[in-house]
Image 1 (cartoon, rainbow, N blue to C red):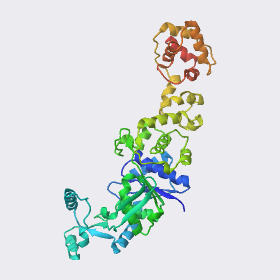
Image 2: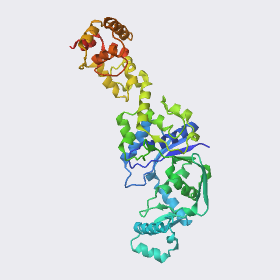
Image 3: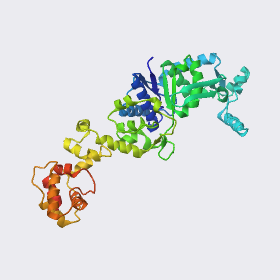
Image 4: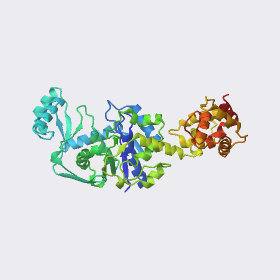
Length: 442
């Protein structure tokens, strides 16, 4: 049987790293098995869902390299939700409830005050036809709840192990709002059954939802025993704080603008939650080959932006000129890329380093006599990777300097920086004329 899994974001905001982790792991699961990956946009919340956010989700997915085999929006499937609503209603599994939010709130408060779980009391099951008609005449429109059947609800979770819920401890979930719109649980289960989803991989905040959905999938004619459920521990920030897509710094859109490479995000998120080391990788194929769902445990993974930037640096350092040529400024050479690639935190830093050999700068000369002596020892062109060593050897012999006293003043005079790429690579790019001008202060 073909493995089928899905990523189902709501287009009510930008994707953040928590969303991206779920998307990536579902994608890797599908690609490792040669299965099908579905991108489903859960947009039944028409008040908050927008076409703009839907487009942004697709763009972010494409930027990460996560292609999909099928995609659809739930607003396109209202006919299926309407049909299943009528069927479950006729079977008595959906029942009308007329309580207002305020009345439900009072019930929950009363139950909590008595030390009881805040479950719906199923009072609406006892309403007579006349009582329902009176509510309707009063302008109340019902919401519809799914009637759970008593019994043990159990599954073998691919991450958490055996999971059990007693249905009597759960509350009958609302599936249809007063305005007739289906809620997530209802539409999601219908889509999962219709699309033949075999693996549902998502955050552990959905565990109790799954208990309800097991019964709902059965009522819809599906077989939940043939679905592999896997609930991942939720990521936190580096200090253990919760992550939210409302925090802009954690959105993929902002990370892209800041210069994070997509493979840095993929490499980090693919390993968080496993005992495996986080390492730079060349591409998604490397992650596919090593993906193993059984490696994910129940420990809380922590997302640290510092780890992301370290990965970003390592990935950029490993890219060849052929990998990046199309992204570089016009006229950039392989020698230029090789000179600075190991010093990039983000790709756009290349243009800043490039100014060292393309633009004038104000040198830092702290020891004029020493720099004048170094200028006098400057060798003639042509220059190559061996020129720096030959020149500094000559300067050492002429001045008796060595170590930091020898090299630091030269770097400051030539680059106006304390640190940077290897001078052996930079010097030929700077060229003799520009180097001499900086040394003698022209």
